[in-house]
Amino acid sequence: MRWRLLIPLLLPLLSGCPESITTIDDAGALRSDFDWQVRANIPLPVEPIDNAMSEAKFQLGRHLFYDPRLSSNETISCSSCHHQDKAFADGRVAPRGATGELHPRNSQALVNIAYNPTLTWGNPSLRTIEQQIVIPLFGETPIEHGISDANQELVLNRILSEPRYAPLFDAAFPGQPISYDTIVKGLASFIRGMTSFSSNFDRYEQGDGNALSESAKNGMALFFSEELECFHCHGGYNFTDSVQDRTMFLVDRPFHNTGLYNIDGLGAYPEPNTGVHEITSRAQDMGRFRAPSLRNIAVTAPYMHDGSVATLEDAIRNYAAGGRNLTAGPNAGDGRMNPYKDGFISGFSITDDEINDLIAFLQSLTDDEFLNSERFADPWATP
Image 1 (cartoon, rainbow, N blue to C red):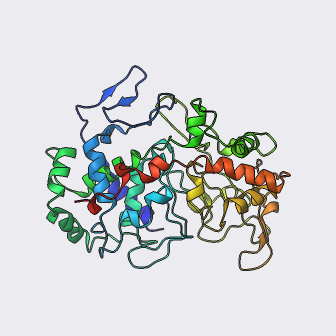
Image 2: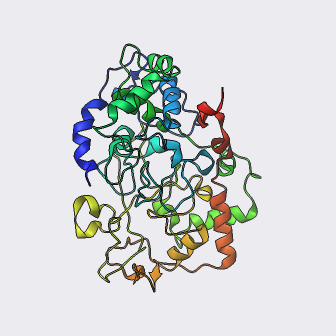
Image 3: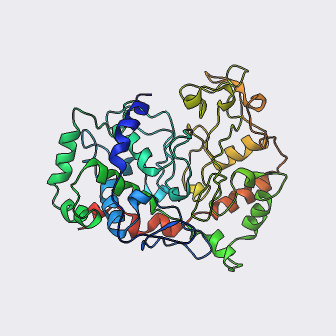
């Protein structure tokens, strides 16, 4: 894809000066005075040395996130594909960019992205939010925001001409010009600050025994059982095995083939969505995708990298079967027999009542405070 060629050219933009608000602790972790709004037993995320968090950057990024001026034709913003009431997913199988081009992958929920050691569904090389943001802004295959050499000055002038931005940029990046460097860093700071740890499950974990229904408690027991093995790929405080925080010295970056497709009987996934294989071209990477966090999962349907699984029940039944068997259509094939399928996708027995209990537990991971907080809402909608 042509956006891969853009990344080396744009990464020099993503450097900056250290800020006086940052310090280094005894373990060598970067610390700032930013309020992450996470409870005491949740580790703090890693902050990049060249873009330490601040409230001013967060608020600047919030304005940029919701601003359609940051696209070629002023038709989309980041929020067009990431809606707060859906945990910053969009409820569609696949989103469309500024020119109407359909993206091949489902919009991911932007929940606790600060804890992700890799970004996007299947690219192990994208390890910072700053790197990832370059792709939707400037990428050409597919076109999302549609900023290019031909229009980037026009787009930047739109931002410069909005009077609310001058004080926001000055507070966030004092003494620095308004540029794509500071735009990317501001956006990254807002997205990095999207933390969500106030669900009913969290209240239960903190000692409120009434925070979960009996059905949800039964579902929790199933979720963490060796029979279902859900927790192996969706464990820990962020409900994913792909996580990093400032307490970690070694970070794992796993990707998994869940037996969703097997269109040629040899393990193939539909182009261009072949997972890590798209980057490496190695056969063993076919169909390997990052396990997303399950926090707020009940509001982020449809599921999987291509939005091809409509409901939580459908997802559970696929895993119970040990993969998905498509008997008709262009992608027909028995994913249960995919030779590259992850070893944890071995199938299990489950009743309808147990499925309902498991769904009740997954629903308990919804954080209504996060979904409705003014802190993450559209600032342009409020005078």
